[in-house]
Each structure stands twice: as structure tokens, then as C-alpha cells.
Image (cartoon, rainbow, N blue to C red):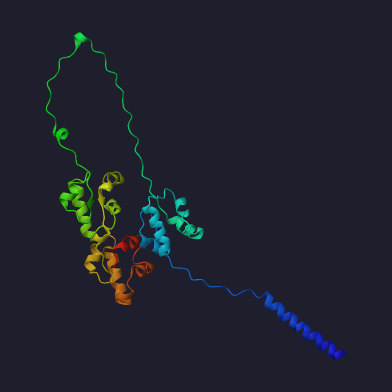
Length: 276
């Protein structure tokens, strides 16, 4: 009888211990795959849909931001980007250090100087001077505002833009040749001598049609073309050539070149609109 009681207690103790260990076992970790994102400085008021996806946003999220801008929405400070319902708080915290919203400085207008004119007595009225011929700058008609496509314009069309003279006309044509084409009007700020004040004077008179952007394959492009490109240069062109030799053309993408530190994140972003 004592032996049966001992066996019963041993079995009961073993069952209780097994059930307890199952309850205390932590649930299996759920692995989630996060979309790989390439982080870089960006302006939410000008960034393209492709570049938003490069930051890790889905196409639907990127389209929502683009549609918000098309309806007149503007991001005036970093916190405005977090108010987009498509951007989660976690994603905003990840992107917040890379958001750059330039603030255009406003020059104070000079105060008008009031000069009191002395009263002239009737008898002391000065004799009227003969009318002087007007200077050329006074009778020459001012330039009228135009709307010019930067990729289609020739020198005559560029000169017609108010604020573009012979120097910048030549500089714009030269930079367009080096790029292959302009992808957006903000690239004018990359031209030597073009500051924010000059750009603000002409930005409403020029545009870039998406169909005019000349695209190319970075894996198939001639090395001399890559050497002359403002966003690549001779050093990076050599790095691209070595990468193709070791990895093959099919693996030569902007993403892989950025991940292998051949191209910087900024240059990757700037080259993205040109890729086939």
C-alpha cells in the first residue's frame, strides 16, 4: 500500500512540473522583415516619389505625400512631416535627422527717406529746364516674364528669361551638357555663381518636363561619360568599372553602388531620376 502511494505521488509531481515548464516557456519570437532603407538628407517639399521609396516608404505612402504637395501643401518645419498619417511615429524618428527644409532669408526693405521740399514763392519760381532726352535704360522696354523648358531652351530662349544674362545663359547650357539633361530646376543652384537670390528671380519662369529627362544605364554607360558627369567624376567612374569587372553588369545598380561605398547617399539620390 505504501509503495502504491509513493508511485502516485511521484507521477503527480512529474505531471505538475511539466505543465508548469510549458506555461513559463516564452512564446517564440516573431521575425519581421523590415524594408531596407537608404538614409540621406532630403527636402520633403521637393523630393521625388522614387527617392521617398528609397528612404523606405511604400509606393502608396510616397504617393500620398506627393498628392499632398500637388494640392498646395507645404512642409514649413520638420514637425509638419510627422503630421502625415502615412508616416508612422517610428519612421519619423528614423528620418527626422535627415530632413532639411531651407529657410529663405528675407532682406529688409529700405525705409523711404522723406525729404521736405522748401516752399517756392511765386515770384521765385525757377525757370523750367529744357526736357532732356531719356537714357536708353529708361525707354527700352523691360523683359516680359516667360516660361521656358530648361531641357529644350536654346541660348535665345534662356536670354529671354528675366534674370538670365549672357554669363548664366552659357553656364546653364554647359551644365546641361555635362548632366545630359536637367531633372529639376533646383539643379540651377549647383551652377557656380548662382545663389538663392538669383534663383528666386528666375524660378517662376523656368521648368523641367519629365519627358525631357535623358535617362541612362549606369552599368552600360561609357566610362568617359561617367567621368564627366558632375555627380560621378573620374574617381567614382573607376570604382564603378572595377565593380562591374568583379560583380558583373547585372549587379551594378545605384543601391549596390551605394551599399559598397562607391557612391555617396547624396549622389545616389541625385542620380536616381536619370536611371532607366
